[in-house]
Length: 251
Image (cartoon, rainbow, N blue to C red; front, top):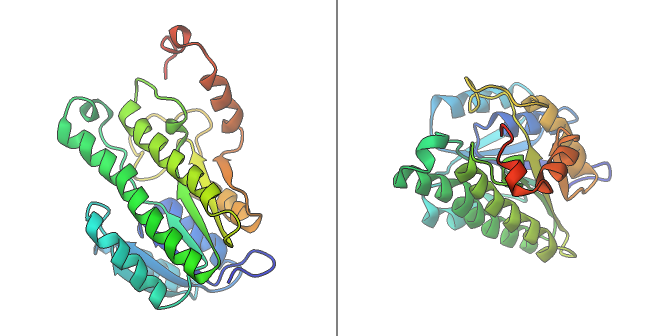
């Protein structure tokens, strides 16, 4: 279980090669070694992620996970929890995709919707059930500021994150009083492989900085955080700009 000062003993990372997710695991492991389960498709990157955490003294397991294989999610989650309690589960997988192709190509749009929204719901329901059964745990879902208001530049991606965000925000309320907490994280532009080659947005940040915010949020049972924090005020302002003016902005 998570101890009195907010340190977990075990972490499940869905999206086991996620740079942000791995930085969060390292943030928790800085206090003591953990049992870590990395859920991802087999790859050299997954092997490297395992070795990276083992160098910190963590006991690392890997399990096969494909966000597109929806019919496997429930069984995968059950098998992970059957092997031992999970204190923190990180839902850190997703696709950014080609923003222009996403609204002109059916397959691209559907893939974004399935991975970023449908798979997030599928795993979220399974994780909520498993954590309710064990009676404790923290569930962390990585949303995006892109989901707070659809923008011409990435509205398909933004719409998938808006749906995911709404689901986990609702799950926060549904699990209240069960011993399970949910934290929705809304990062802005993060310098990762996913965003390599893109022009950084204002208030861009790093996986390590996001990880610091997430670790603090879990320890203090916060339900919603922005990364970095000032994005909360920026997005609040953008949400209230009238549409005729909003469409003129370079966003």
